[in-house]
Image (tube, rainbow, N blue to C red):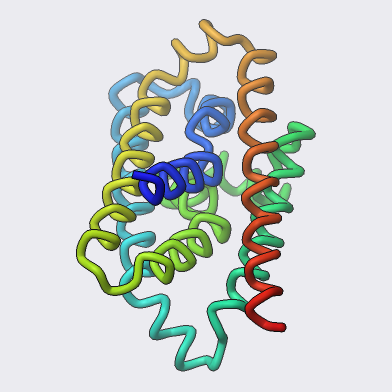
Length: 202
């Protein structure tokens, strides 16, 4: 249960389903409800496929490149801390201005930028690899990580589907407050990752 809660909290604050709402509304808020549903569904499915691939094959890729788990923890912690600071200061800049402009002009925004990098971003990929290493090869541990990832992706889908309602209920200020609280928790987890990685390297 402790590992389940840790996995769920880590992935929840990294993927940040609540923080996806204003981005989704900016990209697809003027589209018909049926098209919004299609975009949300495809984005979550693509992100799930990418996360699953990295969960099962990411460790082998690291081994091939000669990267240790402790180094990954430090790098992942730094990435998570950067995302956390953006969340705390309400800087929703997970993509460049050129990418944002391109996303608005593209007919299909489900793969880019929604699935990648907003949902399955570098922080989520690094978190999955670290959690997978902590779980080991035990079926229970693997099942826990996959279950938490599925739950967070399901929540992300529900928030995207109810984006307009969430915005009306929370308001812009409410969304920012929730995002900043999650950012603070993510910063603490990032520090823990870096501390553990540095300890292992030393």
